[in-house]
Image 1 (cartoon, rainbow, N blue to C red):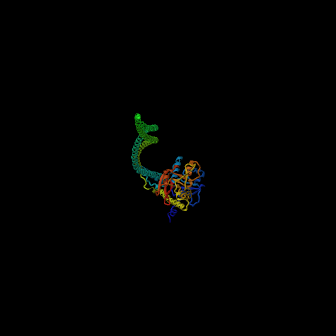
Image 2: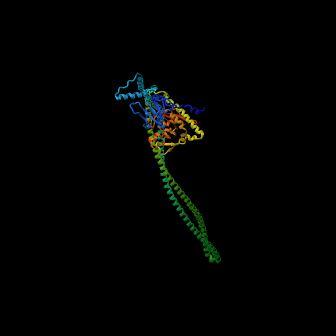
Image 3: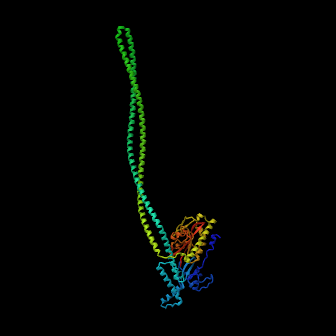
Length: 599
């Protein structure tokens, strides 16, 4: 048979416990539908199964007001009283113990002035037991010994209450011991981590100081570069002005050279005229010489003049040729000068354009340096702020280190204090704890099998079953949430949770919770219609809530075989909580928890 098949037959639903206190179950119409042996003996009821007896002492239903209370029957018998608690359309009722009834009647006689009823010798045993019980408890408390087995005192109602109280105290101190041990184990690591944090904070502060110094040096360098760039821009502006003046001078020189060329050209024309005159003069002198020769002695003087004229013409021609050569050389030189002036103008124009581009580039660089200057200043301020924060964190870390050391000393003192108490080695020595543990583990296994089957049938996907997102239900206080799996839980869980809740009158709730403390489906008695009134809905409707208290967070998160805790509910009761993990397809889904009391 499979594990899921085995757990179905592992749980037996008991009736009312066979306690020394009379216990009843009243139906909605006020009839007794269940009674333990002590109640049947006290009320003289027959043992017919399911006979349905009338309410004890004729209690009217309208007297059972509120969720719980005490009702005292009219008449002279003060022992005819009962304590009731409303539950699922009916009531759980506890009757006075026989010893308690005797004490109430004796007190009433003394108050009325009648002599107290002398107790027979046989009746002195319970009083002796009570005195021995109180002496034993006093001795145990004096020795800080809470390992008191009070089960033998179960015949006394006071013993039952004391047993429950010691059980609550024992488990509360056990939790404090466990927590102090856990804190004590964690404090050295916290101190070590904090020391490392102090060291790292110091390194971080030192690094930030270095970064701040570097950023300030960078800022100074950028500012110096900006100043130098400003000076370069001024020099470039002056160079640009000089280039423009040179370009204008080159242009003027070219114009002057062109004017010289025009004048040289005019001189060339004059030289050509001189050459022509010289040539004509030479021709005339030749002709004159010829004519003088023909004239004979009479033309001898004329011949001399002609010769001189010819010589003059030749010197003029020679001079003209030399002037022409000089002019040609000058024209060539002027051509070279013109080309050079023109080339100089082009070069100066290119230099001017280059200087203009350089000026624009330097202006852009100056603008960017100005922006970087602002950014570096902002970085410097941010680093300075971070350095301040680092120093503050370092101071805080130092204070935390001091407090951690103080916490370590306080935890040691706490361990010493709680170590005064002797606690039972195993809480499962208490029969009720062991009974709840077995019931919780079996039911948790049943719930895991039921959810396994739902996944196998395709009722819900695995991802949806393990989903941890919550949708708030608007307008409800305390808050409620819907999830991807609460509808499936509403269909499956009541059939498994409700029998556990109805098995014992001292079980307050039996529910499932996921690791976040979310309860998708609470018990039916705590799932009443919402009223919108917080004080009513806090108790009457507790389903689909996330219980974030210390116990609520842990019951669905742990994977221990079982976990026993004691706490105060948000409704005020001191209660035990025992939980067992629920696994679905080998994965931890949450936990099944039972809330109960020992009395």
